[in-house]
Length: 193
Ligand code: 5GP
Image 1 (cartoon, rainbow, N blue to C red):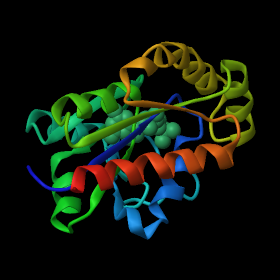
Image 2: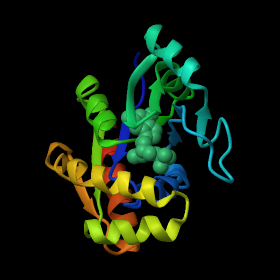
Image 3: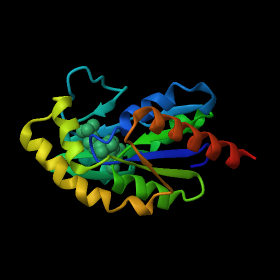
């Protein structure tokens, strides 16, 4: 595989990384395309197959694992598998675009390890675990049990932050968005020189 750059945004669930990634995708000069992950979880209201995720069955997911078709995959939450298909990256690079990922910390670090030069790995840090809980509750997309599962994982995820190239503290969203834009712009520019 060869081609453009890989921009990874990882963070605990509820940190605001999806908002940041969606913002960057709108900036044409960054020439980004979103890496659509495969997942075995159920779609949430409003989520579209082939746009937010490739929603597949657990059986299909396991077949992709067996055939070694994933660049990385993870059982992010119990029975909820998520992964990046190799052909997804090839699809985006074939269009001459850079790839942007919204994935968990383990997956993000795996991509950085596989493509150290091509990857910019950014960790989005929430102001605190308490704030994370408030945001997840406000979002109303998960049950209390699922929220607690996500919070429990957040502390472990926060400990991986120093392994990333950059940490963005998402206290004020506008500042975080601007910081993210500048980081990505600089990385793409530097690497192209
Ligand atoms: P959600 O269920 O909220 O959409 O995602 C749960 C977590 O899985 C988030 O941290 C999200 O970034 C992560 N995730 C999404 N796609 C992938 C993927 O392809 N690989 C990995 N390792 N994590 C992913």
